[in-house]
Image (cartoon, rainbow, N blue to C red):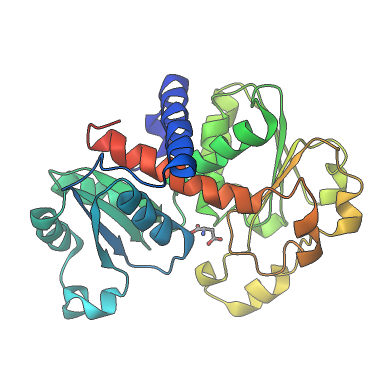
Length: 301
Ligand code: ASP
């Protein structure tokens, strides 16, 4: 799983139905032995809290085990080992590899060299396919549908890989999309082109106020500090949007406020009590989606 472009609506319906089953299973009995005897290599070249721990929890709740490599500085990567060699090594011990890497396309490279399934956990500023899936799954669970919705994606649309994956998935549904960002952080042209080719209605604007009363989903993102070469450019845009209770008072009664997290000021803490604040449920959903994906790639779904 290296890009959401590999999925059609049928695949998504299937993955979400398996995720629903995983959710009921976890809520009723907590764990199963579906993947007993299977090993996951969790290889992270960039920091992670939710993605890495939810993959570990997913594998363990399915009865499997995990080789966690989260500080590549302590592995042979720091001795100069190449990604293909690291992948070839890990697949001797594991049945599936989850990879987070700072370079766009790294998971494609890994998948080319691996004979075991590779799941991208984020490729630099490229894609974050499992996050896109859990985001879409969250929209379904919060609002019951995706067709017909107005989805507004806000913040660092240029560097935010979760935005790239979610936007590409939304092209498969009858959605209206508004991209809200400062001029320097606009959605990349290739993603916009894919949406337009799919017949989606795409708008771009700079102010949340323009869409707050009409959006069914507000998908807020962090300005990706680590992608800026010049910190002065980051400083200029870092506080561009803040969701406050006052702003939420103008939003629809039935809508979802989402964020892939971590947040660094984009959503004020007092918004958390609002029932439309879906970001904590969203991150819980990540585990069910990753359980579904692990079971699927290992032929056990
Ligand atoms: N956790 C997400 C990612 O890894 C979002 C973020 O870092 O802003 O892309």
